[in-house]
Length: 171
Image 1: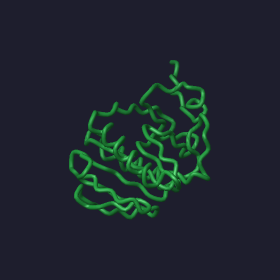
Image 2 (image 1 turned 90 degrees about the horizontal axis):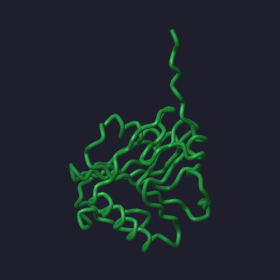
Image 3 (image 1 turned 30 degrees about the vertical axis):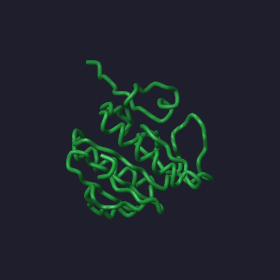
């Protein structure tokens, strides 16, 4: 009987363009991501625009499934990434240094185990702050580098490195 071996996907596969659009690598497996809804895309753009206006002199603000190399077998895609300008390298690779902030916008379609695993991957990588925006619940999770989570509403004001942002004003 022939045993079928499963391919282990790596960062090299990512660099070689072997992943399909809308995929991440998690524990060496390709994971499909759903394309974004219009509301998600609009909010992504509005947040990015506001942050670029107020913080663009200090940070590179990257939008839209930004690849982050957690390790050789885990490549994550973030909605919004803020990275100090002096740490940013403009190339055709994934981010390999922990950014200052990652913002994720969720619509309630992904299982909580997927979200928790991604939060843990970001913590393991050393990302200093994560903001998770849940459109279905109108809830925000503000997570620090130790995993401490503050649960906020869309009416609460977020302070992002001095830029004030109220999600309720944007949705």
